[in-house]
Amino acid sequence: MQDETQSLKTDIKSLLPEELTQAVLGMGESAYRAGQIFRWLHSGVTGFDGMTNLSKALRQKLSDAFYITRPEIIKKQVSAVDGTIKYLWRLSDGNSVESVVMSYEHGNTICVSCQVGCRMGCAFCASTIGGRVRNLAASEILDQVIFAQMDSGRQISNIVMMGIGEPLDNFDSVMRFLRLVNDENGLNIGMRHVSLSTCGLVESIDKLSDYNLQLTLSVSLHAPDDETRSRIMPVNRRYGVDAVLAACGRYFDRTGRRISYEYAMINGVNDTVRHAHLLAEKLKGTGSHVNLIPLNDVPESRLKPSTPEDMKRFIAILKQQGINVTVRRKLGPDIEASCGQLRRQTEKTGLV
Ligand code: SAH
Image 1 (cartoon, rainbow, N blue to C red):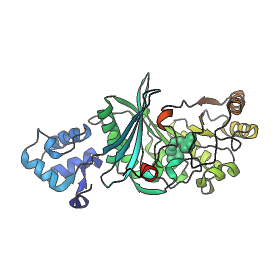
Image 2: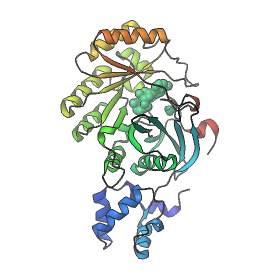
Image 3: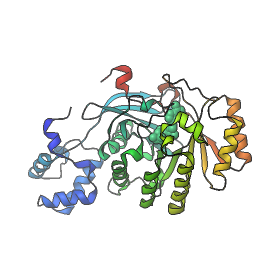
Image 4: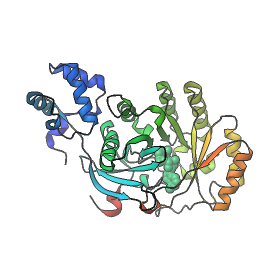
């Protein structure tokens, strides 16, 4: 539980290296000490007393001014099928979020959450059912990587921001998290090993392009026309398909990074021949890539996955039109670890 004094203190792990240095210099200490503290924090130390190469007096000064976030594992499920791990974390205020660690031949990927709940309201997604409770701090996003790595003993090499929440709806903390996780004195995970997925918030895509990051931007398109997309993604009423695709075009022009489009195949909703042709027409010449996701079953939703035949037909049309297309593999099927299945367990099980 959050101690009462915590609200008066600063979240030290959310500080960027230069901010931490400033704070430490302000305490009359050296920049060298700030570097030591930064490394401790990013290696998962949970209290100032654990920073054994600092003087007792400095540790006391630090704990008077700052607090260190530390998630607790409420539940850990390991898939018997493929070793995928799903963590349910309790945050310091009692809220909870999930992360998933997936192992591939080329390394381990973590899927992290960036908000408690989500306010985007997509009809097929479990994360949005209770709405958005709050944004995560940068430290709380980072903690998922640090503590999953420590607990699992698996070195994390890739990050996908595809867990609970809409990253561009928590823009500042997400940018801060990316700087921190990329820092050579921290986890040092390169931007090319990060994917950020958005439902398509146009102004924020433009803002992101200003940062010129080498990450992969994934856009949840799920339909090539406004009528279909608005039915399943309420955000489409604010930013329609053409506005989102135009923002993606600007993003590519400014960063040189091709967009990856996510498309969840929903039976009878977005998987017809007409949808396939229209999608191909809209993406032609962009060099973009479409990642089809067979819809995962969310019991609260009436939407069902497309049949294998309809998927095959859809893929064939896209290929014929020269669009790069892949089908996302489903990992952790026995532990509900797939896209759209992460949610606040509190509501479902009353665990917390
Ligand atoms: N808010 C971000 C991240 C969400 S989760 C976004 O909208 O992109 C990552 C992906 O899973 C998104 O493409 C999302 O649309 C998709 N998804 C959500 N629920 C799903 C479900 N039931 N089956 C398949 N994909 C789903």
